Image 1 (cartoon, rainbow, N blue to C red):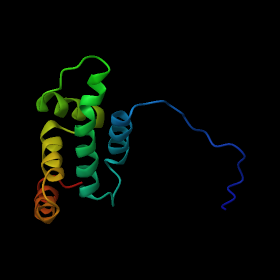
Image 2: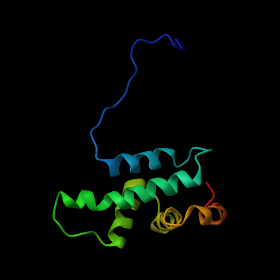
Image 3: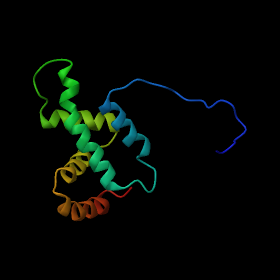
Image 4: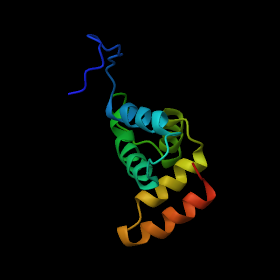
Length: 110
């Protein structure tokens, strides 16, 4: 245990749904070096899968892919093209993801 000489740690506790939590995670780590591209792709894939769940609280109709991408873009602060690139990686079979990640890193360096 590290003793920093403080007895309280300032923090904000906030309730949020899964898609908002994933979006915040991406937004907060966007400029952190060492965060792997595949992690963004995985989280955006999860957000895409969860997007209909958020709509389920409102109605029974599914969101279009375009609306899901817009939602993810708004939650993460990433551009729509970047979201689509990460999403395309998350839907590939694992053996194809490496070359696509390399392509993405070259076109969208962090």
